[in-house]
Length: 158
Image (cartoon, rainbow, N blue to C red; front, side, top):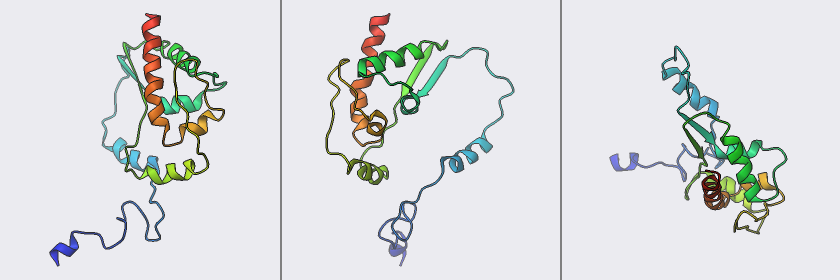
């Protein structure tokens, strides 16, 4: 009986799915509130910024008038990043390694398309629906070449 109690009695753990098989989702705000409640309140805001951390996907989603090539997108991103006065700037693109609970969502999005693009260099044209492309499972694979392009641009600007 002890061995039996160690394993879930459902096909999928209830921490991942409901009894009917639908994905168990939690609002991010519900997860953040307990963390905020545990944090000490900062009495004063620092006068200088040492480090700025930017969510790369969020930044790309907020772009208006998206440039037509990946080189131009990289340049636009880098130009905006240099407006910060911090000594360090980090652009983070989160990824979900496979297998992941996000695989199901990605498979739904990816079913409607069967083409794949490759960023071969700064002259590579971005997909017509760039924002939709960011939501596919292949986007993190492509962002590694995109971020290295930003690094090369940064070196040229120095």
